[in-house]
Each structure stands twice: as structure tokens, then as C-alpha cells.
Length: 119
Image 1 (spheres, rainbow, N blue to C red):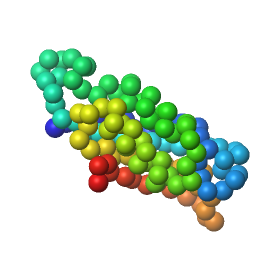
Image 2 (cartoon, rainbow, N blue to C red):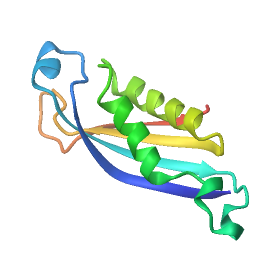
Image 3 (cartoon, helix red, strand yellow):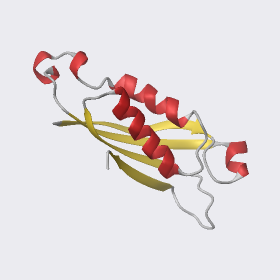
């Protein structure tokens, strides 16, 4: 097994419980840590047997900028499911979603959740 990490992927989207979050939108940051089953690509030096991280980024972008979710937990699991579906050589996908503009009554850098799929 080996690991591919995509760190701090940034997207503008409209997720959240409150109407203002849908109306205004905000930036979301995604980390994806993918545990991959080697299928010969480590020896052959061919992209055919591995996860193309450019294509993985596009998959993440489709989910994040697509349908609105109320919970970032749901967003994280949907990203993980999409990646595992698109790339069958992924054994586990650990997805972190950070929301820097979370509506909380205080000052913080961000709220984040992490989901590992499959569970």
C-alpha cells in the first residue's frame, strides 16, 4: 500500500445550515489522504495503475461545488465515496473538510471534520 495526499484544495461553495451560508457562499478547504493498492504502477512507472491526482482533484471539485449539503460531515463522506467509486484501487479515503467562516459565536481559524471511508 502507499498513500497519496492532496492538501488544502480550495473551492468556493454554498454549504451550511443557514440561509446566509447558501446566499453568500464561502471557501472550503479539502484534504484527501488516499491509501492505494499498488497494481504494478510502482514498478512500471505508469499512471494507468495508480490514482491520477489531477483527476482526483476534479472529482473532489465536482462534489464540493455541486449539490448543497447542510453538514460538512456529509460533504466529507460524499467526497470519499466519489473518490472510491472513481478509483477502485483506493482502499481507504480519509477526507478532511475545513470551513473557515463557520457561524460560531467566537473567534476561530476554522471548523473541520474528518471522515474515513469505507468505515
